[in-house]
Length: 304
Image (cartoon, rainbow, N blue to C red):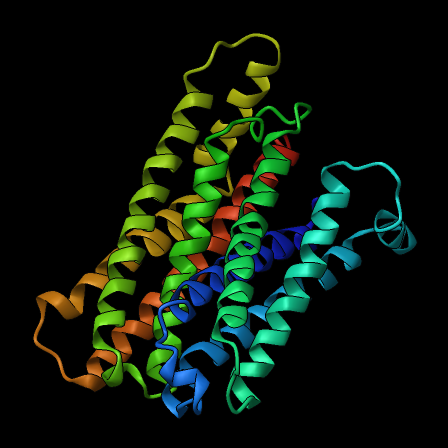
């Protein structure tokens, strides 16, 4: 319980939800003429490839969840439980989001056209809402665990959501470069950079609030355990994961590589390199954040 596999589940699930939401937001502004007559190759890659990545990520997150549990049959029982709780809601969220995401990915990659664009917009609107819910779900679940004082902080929600959406924007931009459609959608690329920087700022502020709230809390009762955990997180043997992986590479590195093409004159090849570097930094930072927070909360004494 709360091992490496759960850290991968938190990372992949949040990334999949955020990427599905970002892609659906982009799909909603695709002109109807581009899908009702014939889906152009540019828009096919623009929407289909990120949705495919989100589908693979949500499937991998579910497999990580199964790998961590000692009773796989208990996971199946969640779908037929007469009681509605946060676990059953989370299980259905994964299945419904993954199914809809896979269906839309197949449509954009292999479909020819759509007769009723409103139905497509409705499907993407639902996926957008589901993506936000999937992204926020794990943070809400951890924040509701009173037995782990470090996690029992509502700062965890904007921290995890901000990191997932910052990584999703970076991944989407990297897909644009990889699919060689970045020059067809320069305005979208600029907006993705702006969104990524906004979510990185949200992530940084939330990280400060998360750490300071626990560190400056009263040293009594459960708050004392939170102080011990956050001290382990920030100053313990595994603090390099927080400061190096998350703060330095994930936040500072991402900001640098997002701003570098704006400040420095560069051709497409250099812009491609900056985009891929920003994506790598965001992904590493998102993963490091989950692992460091999870391990510091679950093992405040042993650390890493």
